[in-house]
Length: 227
Image (cartoon, rainbow, N blue to C red):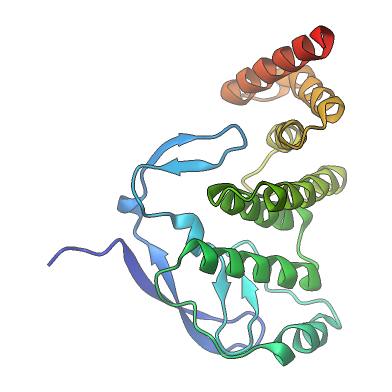
């Protein structure tokens, strides 16, 4: 019998504490062919683990990722009950997901994360991945809408330094702000942040990011002065 790329995992909802099932991808089926300039992974096969990063509780609708904290500030649970659970029709995301399913899960996750007051770095990552999913479906207007949200959240994260202790670092955030700005057509902001990345190069051992930043900075400056 052929092994499925997917397996079921049982989770406890952070909000309502009930058990529910979700789907995950076996690590040996995850094969990245290349990464786009804003880090979106392109996979060699049809198995896309990005689709399964957000866990959706079938009982209350609360949606979260492994990056969410278990702490709920006073009043947050009540807000989630009022704005999410009260409108939720019991629905399981336990099976194999389409892009449409993944988009719904991520958008629920972003809404829940906002109500829960999750870190800016967490919300930025969700918004950026929603933009990637819209890119996969060639919905450019929606892609840019969520890129804008991602950029705002990355700027906030950089400002308050809530990325510390995560897999992201200062240089990666600055690079993403620059690259998202470039993709949105905001050339001034892009050049500014690429310049900051280049200025900070001695502080980080990130040769690939520095190479990408220098390439984009040079290209954009040439375009600016030739236009």
